[in-house]
Image 1 (cartoon, one colour):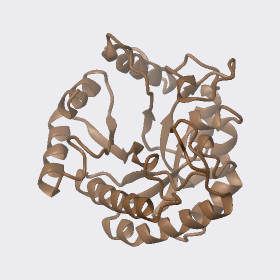
Image 2 (cartoon, helix red, strand yellow):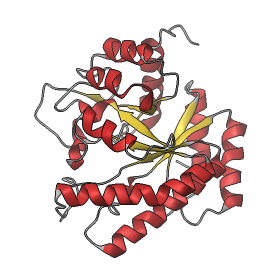
Image 3 (cartoon, rainbow, N blue to C red):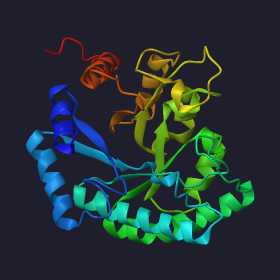
Length: 273
């Protein structure tokens, strides 16, 4: 689908906003200058949909902690472009994957020693932070078990707080916690640091730890009432973005409407026509 089609579908399904994905090609890419980004923002406004944030899968093929200096430089350049893109799209949220010890779903993924990964991740965020502060964009660090880095609440809290800047916060992903822990245990500890959220469904009934293990909302073992309760306790009032990798093959629209209905029920907003 084009971005225009995505915006229209999301609005018809009842969503308030969508998260847009930055890629090397397409509408939202390095080829998009200020005019093109302004056009995308206007397109979303016309559709009646907000842009909740910018994310990107480019942090995997181009990690900020890669062993190759040239790859790290490219990753920093991409991240810098995403900061500017978020600013011109009118969103303050940029999802950032700070680094990876190992990326299991990438063929020939390299290993980066944890200490080295940590040093490179902190150095990268320090380089990106001045531009983010200037553009009033938040670098929201995502929790991802699969990259074997920042795997506990204390690790995440120490990393985020170490920069002593309100522009480094957390993009919390419920599904990324589920393989080994529980999101409702993390939320009270991260507290006000949580700036944006992915809702991903996961089932603990299997042993698959790949991207294939994520499910449509409510088709898993996540304790959503507990998740919603803890989010309410910390006063979270930001966006709840459903993230999924495998749209229904023949009727992708069905998944969008199913996710919208599931979120309405979580929020107590049933009965929408």
